[in-house]
Image (cartoon, rainbow, N blue to C red; front, side):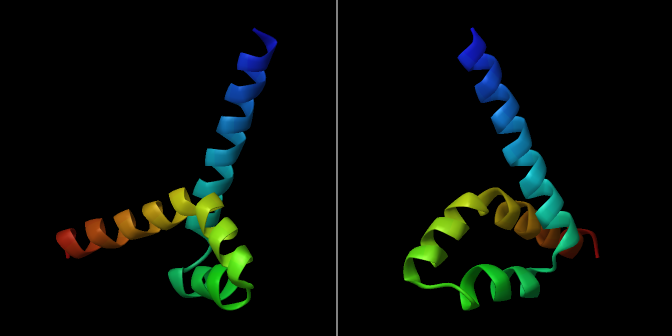
Length: 68
């Protein structure tokens, strides 16, 4: 029971952090920080961690393009 609560809290923190990053950083800055300034292993791990932020940034671009 306790581990389930800890897991849910960690998942909420993880997704909240990704939403915050997607909101505060531009796609260009995300690429610079998460791709350009990383070694090979860092690129893989950072982009796995920030996959929801990349998805949200792409979704925002698609929605804006569809509306405009």
